[in-house]
Structures are given as C-alpha cells and as structure tokens.
Length: 584
Image 1: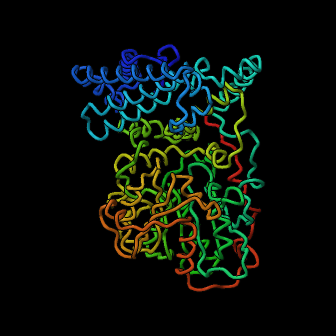
Image 2: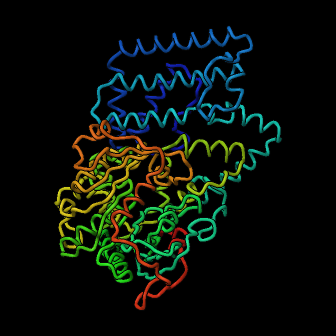
Image 3: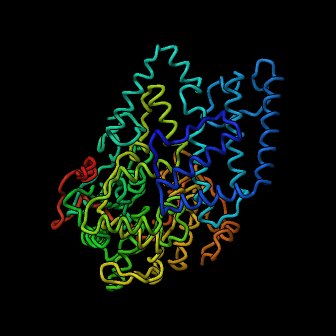
C-alpha cells in the first residue's frame, strides 16, 4: 500500500474542510490503482462512495466544522497576542511541546486547525455504516492520514525545525540528510544510535552457558544465583520473530535474571536468524527441532520427568503446538504451560489481521512454494506503521529535520534487531492462524499429530496486556478458554512489549486477576467485572505461582549441562549475535 512522491496527496494541518475531503478522493484513487483486490481499497472506496451519496450528512459536517473553525479564529483574535489563555489545560500531545504551538498565533492556528480536521475525519467515519472489518480498515487509514498530516511533520510548519535551521545555518538539515541516507541504506528508520548496545555486554548479559545447539536453535542454561533452586526447571520459549533478549535486556529489566534470582533453574531457546541454509524449514521443524527437542534435553539435564514451560508471543503458539504433539505421543513432559501475550485462538487479530487477506496469503504461498526467506525488515516496517505517532513520525522529524541522533533505548534497539523467517514456515503460519484460525479446532496436524489444546489440561498462567496492538487481550483471553479450568488469567497494564518488560522495581505497573480460582467465564467483559486490581508487576505473581507449583527445592547445579550435554560457549551464544542475513 505505497505510492510514489508524485501521486501521494500533500497533507497539511492547515487545509480547509473542502480541501480535506478532496484528499479523501485522491487517496481513494491511489488505493484503487495500487492496491487492487485489497480490503483497504475496497473499504475506503465504499466509505468515500457512501459519503458522496449522503449530501445532507456531509453538509451538516461541513457546517459544524466551519462553525468550529470560526470560533477557533475568534478565540485566537481575542487573545491579543494570539497566545492561549493561561488557565487553559495543557496540551498533552508530545508533538506540540514547543512553546510556539501555544504562544504564537500562526502556529497555534496550525495546531488547532489540525486538531479540528482530525476530528472531522473521525466524525466522517462515524457517518457511514460498514461491517466490522471494513470499519477497522477505514479507521486504520484515517489514523494514518491524521498522523501524516500533522504540521509537526513538515519543516516549513514546524517552529522547532525552523528555529534550529536559522540558528545552525542549515547544519541540522545537512545532518538530517546524512541520517536519511544512512537509514535508506539500512532499510529502516533508526530508533537508537548505531553501536549504543552490544549483545552480551549491555543487553543479554545474564550469565549462562549454551549446552546444546542444532541447525535451528541454541539452548541456554543460566547460572544459578541462589544456593537452592526449584526442583522443576523452567524452559522459556521466546518469539522467533526478533531475538530472545527482549526477555533479557539491561540488568534492571531482565525477566530472565529476575527468574534466576528468584531461585529458578532457567533454560531458554535462542532461535537462529534464518539464512539461505534454512530456506526450506517449516512450522513443524520449529516445533520438533526447536521446542520438543529443547524440552527433552532440559529433562535429561535436570533429571526431572516434567518441566515448567513459558512461551512469549509466537513462542507461546509454538510451545502449545509442541505440547499437543507430545501429548498425542503420550509424552507428558510438561508440569505447566504459561503464555505471555500469545495467540492460540486467532479470533481477534487486531490491526495486523487487516493485512492478512486471502489474496495476500495465496500470494505468499506461491512466492515461497519452493522455499526462500521472508525478510525481517518487512515485518519491522509493518509493525512500525501500526504505531506511526510513536515509531515513525517523531523519528522522521528528529532524525531527518533536526539532524539529531536518537537517544539510546534498549527496547527500541531490540525492536530494530530484525530476524528473517523461513518462507514456508511464515506462509503456513499466516494461512493456518490469521486467515483460517485452524489451530483451535483440531482441524490440522503438526508433526503428524492433530493439534488439540483442550487435551493438555495443564496448569499455568496466561498473561495479556491491556493495550496490546499485536495480540488483543480479548484474543489472549479466548486462547486461555481453550486450556481448561487450571489457567490463571492475568491482564497486565501497558502493551505487547512494555507490559511484559515490567520489572517490579519500576513500581509503575498494575494488573487484574480473578478474585478466586476457578473456571473462566466465557465472556471476557464478565471476567473484567469480577476481577481485582493489583498494583505492581505480574512478575511477582508468576514467581510465587512457580514456587507453589514446584516440588520443593534442591541444591543448585555447580555447572551447566551434564556429561552428555556439555557447555559449548558462554551465553548469550552466537545465534543471537548474528546480523540480519541477506536475502537474494
């Protein structure tokens, strides 16, 4: 859904309502011409057509908008110097933090007119009756338009950029152009400075050893920091999209370190960054040679018949599939299964699901029929545009117009450390989960066995986050319903990443949980009504649950691995350190 510079509408915060709706038509033509057989184009064209066929509603929208603009201009004129009244509530929009947006009449007009135009677009969306999917598609496009047309995004209407240009004699624009060329070569917007973080030195620093590796993963055993540990070990299955160290960031916000320091024997899978030699791998390979093999080795090393398991995002989906396969083969090697913002039931796939339509999935099947690699950069760019006001436009302004270097931020460094996926695995995942939602109903086989989550009957916790734009919490709740009545559902604050990277030391988070144990109600809103609010991090709750679910303490192992699985190298290992392999 892209357009060249020549045919992209030029958006600005100071356009009139008539001009604004002309942009509707222009954007619609771009969608129709460049995104044929696309639900965004279809929904947008239906939306624009419905507006055109309802002139009465449009006239009322224009009338209301014109009145608001007149009132806004009168208020600016009455203020004398154009500044906002001192008693007016502060604007909380970070884009307009510069004082001139409130003290200078011209910039104040640009800001307030932009806000009125944004309101008009959203009100126009509410005028048209669309089905749920069409409405989500239209709302997504409108929010992208609103983000793009902010006057802060343009050098000629951003007072901070103008001031910096005058003060530096244009050196900020020179530096910005150099930043732009660097990012153009990299293929993505830089969110942190190059070299700000080093894997194994400033991130992924929890001590441990790689005790096994195959073509798909390295298995890390972390060094104990307590004299005794829970007898049952814990295997962590991170996403294979991006790298595992989101769970082992800096020392102060590492979930892995927190689990180890809390007296757990922790193992973790570090997935390979797919390269040419992995181009034929499929979903079954990740389940069998990844999760199942790791569970088996952890059991052998720890001499425990059953191990606790914890999966994050797609790692949780892989974990559940693996345990279902093992159950079918009468291998009951899991003591528990806990999931962090993971899909099992893809009933609500949020904004991401809008992009996964049948024609697109068919095209991916055809593209990767004979193998190949799906680029991690493509995923990185897609996820960025799900949050343009956080991950796109602020960096366009600061990197390219102000010529600044972004501040170091470990989460954003991880976010930019992309990984490729085998194309066959990626295409299978799209069709069987996002498009068909087949995992939940026992219709498909993985590693030769039908997937049946209802047969697992394992205790565990399912942690969702309130503002998750990747795995909506309602879908995580629906996934928990598939697992029986031994599941403790927890709804944490924040989003897909920040809600998981939530150390107790921050003392900012909170979560909701059931007031008493028992079967989850079918309706998630009913669960919310009966839940209690707890200040603090879900990390504490999970550790207490692990302690309660483990069969006592044993002396911590003096060294990693055993006679069969000897340490191969220090953590974090080599797989996580590999740069993004090229795709031919």
